[in-house]
Image (tube, rainbow, N blue to C red):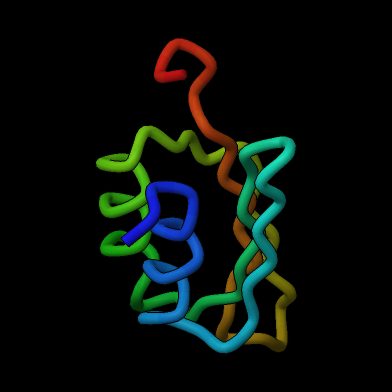
Length: 73
């Protein structure tokens, strides 16, 4: 698998709502709250850092923004 496809394929395992920006090495995805720890751990293994999380009161999902760690390039 191409290295630049890994963030997208990983995200597909947890959600249907994923946006990968290869130019900026960032990933935005919508996940169930109970999957957060697993998703966080897996993206960390790929060298991504969590930059932002949003949760709406009535929602059971999180919107997360991960960005590739600059030192990992």
